[in-house]
View 1 (cartoon, rainbow, N blue to C red):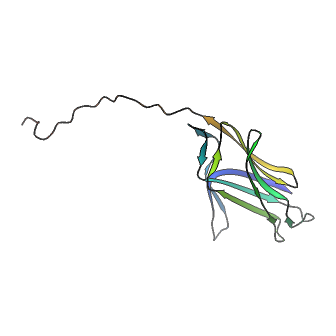
View 2: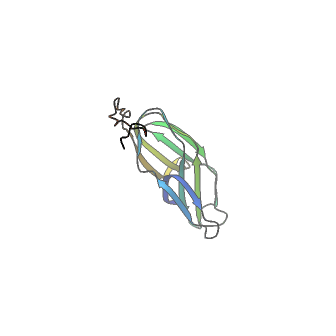
View 3: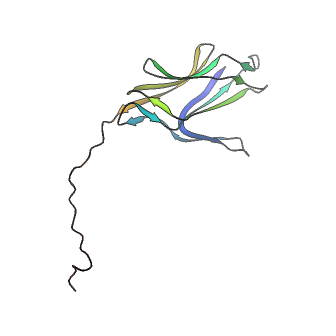
Length: 147
């Protein structure tokens, strides 16, 4: 088996008429101001091909997300090719906890072997800067305006 791609994005959809995949807001880097942080929309899309001699069903597959050496997510995935040579997996995660900065790695693993991966740097951008004093120009009321 071979993975043609594994991509992480905020969302994905499959068109019913054409059966084509669209990915929205591909995640290339996560810039986070405070940790731990939750990513509310995280989607993993994978396209796998198989040779005709390879099995149509794979029970020992899983999607894994790790940050550094720490596993933060694992989901068993049953691969059912149904006599086809291609299989699309779309996994939507609602609420992925990111504990610290580092390198996030999403992988598809089959029989304990990594088939595909996507790397995402997680950058600590620091706390937002708050401006304590704002220079405001006075607002003149209708009564104060000279005519």
